[in-house]
Amino acid sequence: RSSRFWDQTPFVVQVVSGLVISEFGGYFSHRLFHIRSLPLWRFHAIHHSVSRLSWINSAHNHPIDMFKKAAVSILFLHIFGLGFEDIVFWYLACSNIVTLLSHCNIQTTCGVLNFVFNTPEMHRAHHNCRNGVKTSNFGEIFMFLDLAPSTFSRPYHR
Image 1 (cartoon, rainbow, N blue to C red):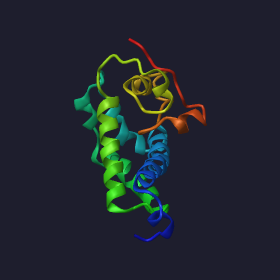
Image 2 (image 1 turned 30 degrees about the horizontal axis):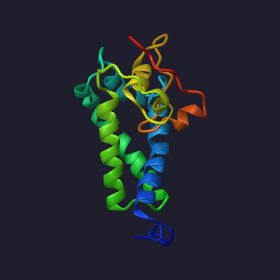
Image 3 (image 1 turned 90 degrees about the vertical axis):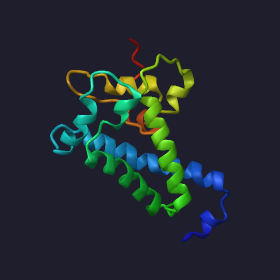
Image 4 (image 1 turned 30 degrees about the vertical axis):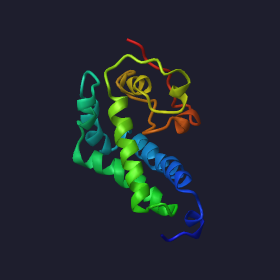
């Protein structure tokens, strides 16, 4: 381990800090891949091409889009000195679980959790098309970055 600060920090705090730090990479790269004027959208558009969310199409991605999601978030972990194997493992585990759950085609009412996590309700709003453009709820695991720049959209109910 390369950082004395993190060496003296409880493991649970390291994991939670890692998840929060990795969210910055995931959020900003996700927003970047939604800019239609950039060629990056073509890679991410494959994920949005499905007409109905389900856990199986959570993996309906272009390889470049999949690589981006992990690489940018893990880069942020390394920049902040949390690129340890065990922290990266917990980031990947939590990210994949949230991705599967957020794409589940289940009717949920998550209440206040919608302001904290990327729930199925919140991700349905992300996949809901407004004038052909997806403009909200870019959070990968958490929603706190969507609350700040006003990209937060209330859940879409069928």
